Amino acid sequence: MGEYFLKRLLAIIPILIGVTLVIFFLTALIPGDVVDVLLESQFQPELAMRLRATLGLDKPFVVRYWNWASELVQGDFGLSLINGRPVLSQILEMYGPSLELAIIATVVGTLIGIPLGVLSATQQFHFTDDFLRLTSVIGFSLPSFWIGTLFLLILSLYFPGFPILKFVPFFKDPVLNLKIMMIPGMTLGIAMVALIMRMTRSCVLEVIRAQFVTTARSKGLNERVVLFKHVLRNALIPVVTLVGLRFGYLIGGLVIVEEVFGIPGLGRLVIYSISKRDYPLVLGVVFFIALSFLVINLLVDFLYAVIDPRISYGKKAE
Amino acid sequence: MGLMGRSQRRKPDKEEKTDRDWGKALLLRRFLRNKFSVFGSLITLGAVLTAILAPFLAPHSPVEIFSVPMSPPPGEFLLGTDYLGRCLLSRIIYGAQVSMGVATFSVTISLTLGIILGLLAGFYGAVVGSVILRGMDILLSFPLVILALGIIAMLGPSMTNLTLTIGVVYTPTFVRLVNGSVLSVKGNEYVRAAKALGSTDLRILVLHILPNIVAPIIVQASLTFSTAILVESALSFLGMGTQPPTPSWGAMISESRTMMELAPWTVIYPGIALSLTVIGLNLLGDGLRDAFDQFLKD
Image (cartoon, rainbow over all chains, first blue to last red; front, side, top):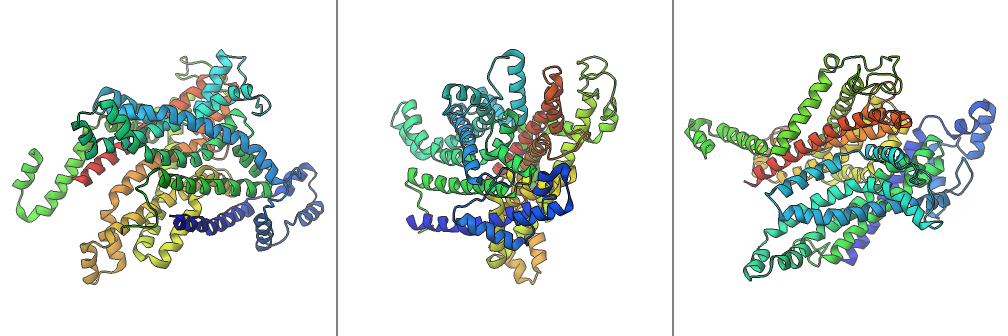
């Protein structure tokens, strides 16, 4: 098993090289560059040429890629072209709020989604199950930017004093911060609740028909014991994977929720850096996001093997 | 039972055909028995008809500006007017055209690319297969929205580019699905028989393999259709998609945000239209999947 994960870890390297090439290629093809943004109204062709030369933007694509990648390997993400600050420190600064949002959404999703999913499965063929299934489809069909906007509308109409849209870092004032982050976190959490509920339901239904459950029942065990000790312990394993994988997908949702609620996180940094054509920043943020996405997926696989002793990677069909 | 009895009464020389008819009827029955999927189909049908019949249904032009901005519903304008004084109902109706149009074309793109690449990867394995699949792995290691934002920034925001982008972004899902299905049917006897009879690769792929893997592709396409609508509206909301004054539901919500305390209906109604359409499509997709799943199990 150790060998399998080492292999997986090594397989990340060619993917990461591909990822950097794709990002670099995309950013190189974005029309207009940072010089246009910096000079704006005082645009002069000569000045622009000189500025491009200083920033190294006049060199060919391959050279620029090589320079950037070789620095990246040494942990140097470069400097922002707009404000001259190190890219990595900007990313780490914005990482906190995004992580916090993702955690709130995941916690909300798990705490509400799993019990509802179990309830839905145990009530199969009853009205409760139908109702919960419909609720879940509605839950992941609702666009988060609309739900977020509706929350803002309700708050501004009925709770004018509620602190929102004025971000406060967690370590400055934890209580106020949580109050501000709660609504955005929930906006992101609705789809999580719906997806986790659905997954839990189908996993429980699969296990509930297994023979060992019938055996447990025929032994005369209390239905509650059967459910909690026999069914849930087996059914919740795939749910862990889903929760983990969704954690990665949340990054996409973050772009939208951060934009709606004005939270300074990674998602907004992506949009900001693209709109300013701040290449080192775009490259850095997107690389960072892709890397965390890959690492999370690997961790989830690992966790999956740890909690389920039946799974042994690398030894297929002995 | 009734259905089976009927199929047995048919002429024996048409046995294969009646078997297939029986299968289709069963599939349809499974699908119709599920009240959610019927509900979903009705909503979807409604949305499609709205999109097609928009010019006949809309009371006004979607871009005509009347001198009554933010007139509340219901009045002269059934759903009121937006912050510029355009008829909200007409904009929502024409918005269906944008949503459905972008989703249809982008799903067609990912479906076509996905089927071609997936068939090649699955059928030719080895070098071709791993090159294609590694390429897809790279695309899949970006969160979807981030990749879409990157491509849109490169191409420039417009409805056509948004369609292309969504098409490209969803291609890897189809490639993987088709590749997996091809691998599972490739070793079957009918494929080997066709090969032994000297059929060309193209003939085997199109006539023997594709028809046998079509079920999961249909299900995935219907579910992707609804996500494509969501992504279209989300990117238009971020200003990266459909440009004003074209009425896209996402862009309408975004534009109306600054005035929403004064005219809440301008953000509420487009959102309802959008959510309802996506809910309908997801119910439809779920219903299709359940029907196919049971069908394949039997």
